[in-house]
Length: 107
Image 1 (cartoon, helix red, strand yellow):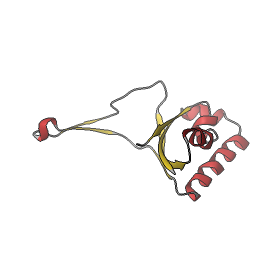
Image 2 (cartoon, rainbow, N blue to C red; image 1 turned 30 degrees about the horizontal axis):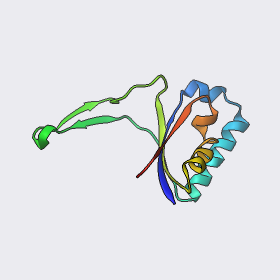
Image 3 (cartoon, rainbow, N blue to C red; image 1 turned 30 degrees about the vertical axis):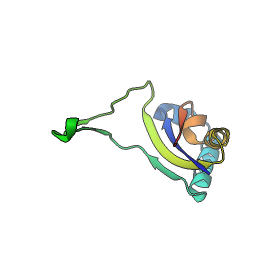
Image 4 (cartoon, helix red, strand yellow; image 1 turned 60 degrees about the vertical axis):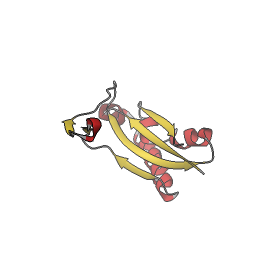
């Protein structure tokens, strides 16, 4: 099975306006992914790390990239194909609560 990194973006207000039954089903899908061996987590506060020429490590609080929606969480999942990975994450909270989920194949 191939591995994929997923990044979920979502606004808490959009999540809150999503019907409870839809949210419950989305959390059940997350639980199913975990039962299949996925590593799933909610995003905390990011820290950027730089170490040019391995000579002077620098850190900076905050994300390197920006988007209209905040990053809500990450997962590492397994699937037989990109299409299967997309299908698996199409029913998780960020996908159904007016957010978006990126799927990145690991090579």
